[in-house]
Length: 94
Image (tube, rainbow, N blue to C red; front, side, top):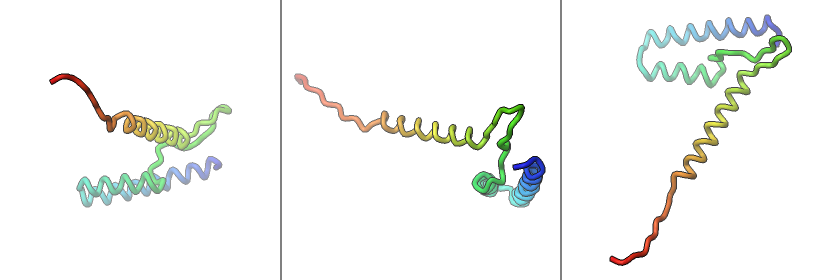
């Protein structure tokens, strides 16, 4: 993606976010806020950083987001495996 296309994408995202904010202001409920944030995040409307290259270094925001999401998913899976269910048996005199 060249710089002009990247700038146009940023401007387009900004204008779409502005429209979403105006809709939330017109209907200020938590459900409206959640719907706007979810719609923005799932459609790519809200993308705070872009993938770019500076001085030969590649920076990939989307790869970092995927890494974090995968790490959280693995952690939650391991936590659920370690949280049970367990069976306790004991023998003794009463």
